[in-house]
Length: 151
Image (cartoon, rainbow, N blue to C red; front, side):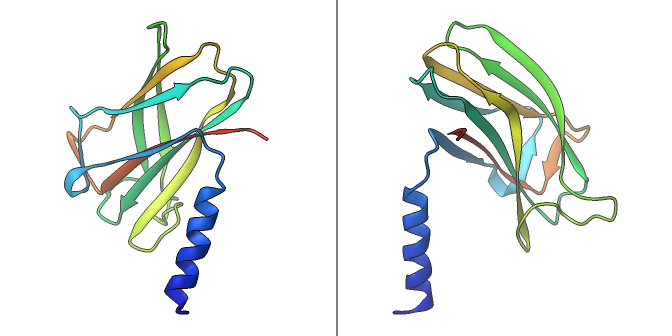
């Protein structure tokens, strides 16, 4: 059995054991995020008893010219109420070394929201827009959201 086959078996078995309730990525065409583009994730929630950790993952390449990424975030609850927030994700240190894992494509996951217990069942809609001064951000390839129960 080749190394690739062993790796594929290990990866597929670890992927199946995940207890996340939601995991999705949005890929930006040509690794460019236009300021007018909103990334939207619809998280279905049916369990009101568990507490969940919410992670945001940013994938960038070496073409990204900044150390951080400002984001405008919006959460729309099932009852229609909105919560807005602005925050910064630090992608590199002062010397330009990327914090994320990877070689030419770096993936950085951060705890987006402290563990939360959803108050209502239904679909929670998370929306993100880039808040940088550049209209088009070069080098951001993907944005992902993952929701998983806290042990």
